[in-house]
Image 1: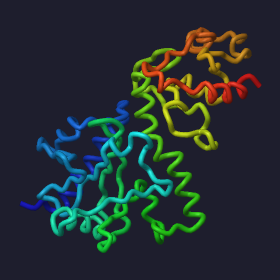
Image 2: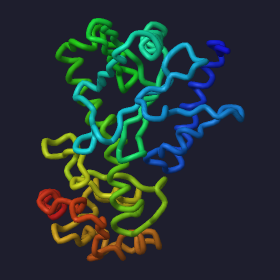
Image 3: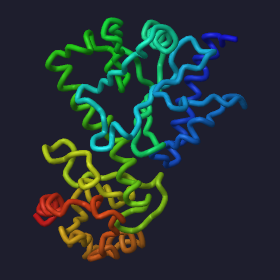
Image 4: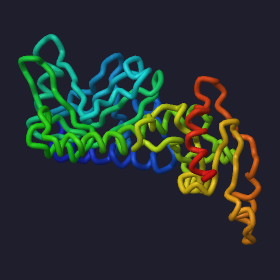
Amino acid sequence: MRRTRLEQDSIRQDIFRWLDDRRDGGAYEYSRDELVNYTFNGERIPLLDTGRGIRNPSDFDSTLTIMTSSKKTRYSDGINSDGLVRYSYQSRDGGDNVKLRSAFEHADPLVYFLGVRPSHYVAFYPVYIVHDDPVARVVTVALDESLRYFDDPLHLREFERRYAERLVRTRLHQPMFRARVLRAYASACAICNLKHAELLDAAHIIPDGEGSGVAEVSNGLALCKLHHASYDRNLLGITPDYEVRINQRLLDEVDGPMLRHGLQDMHKRALTLPRRPADHPSKSKLAERFTLFAA
């Protein structure tokens, strides 16, 4: 039996709340197992469909989630510079195609799951279908709610393009970057080894607003909130040989235990590196950043 629109809307909002709660608790990726076992009022409602990239519950009027597997995002994060994702219809009519079109016509909010590694995903929500091309059999999905308000998402004006590129760089790349960096560092701060993911950030070595500030693990460090803030403000530096340095002014300062144990005791401490050499921080990027600290 078809659910009412009110119940469908309630389930969508509860999914967003559920994802929020897990993210706020430190989750940086979602496993297939937990996504297929989401429940609403005690009823199990899988958020992924086995072997398919789209979830269209039979009792929903329109699409609930879309997924791109990690096979397509292994070497990049799969996010276009305009913040839009193109998703192809099925080759046959009916079924999924009808519900995709319905999501577009009713402006229903969806979740887009992007594979970060096999059976693990980051989530973008709410996302909206902003264009439907029934001839090419493709829908276009905006990964940020603000992008849906462009007059023509497929043909951006210059100021819209600049906005979209900035949004992609500063917001949409971050979930993939965070998931890959924290995974590489086994959810522990590279400096103090704090192991609470909810207190950790994926810090850029070269800021993402600069040309070489790419959202790759080699340009990232898993840092606790204190060490991330200190690194961003050049109160803490990291040498190309993976050693921590603390600003001399802070070393000379006399304060309480937070300064002593949190920062002063980290001076000349060796960085804890990821297990895979390919995930180690770039020595050239560390050297470039360290010049700012040394100055």
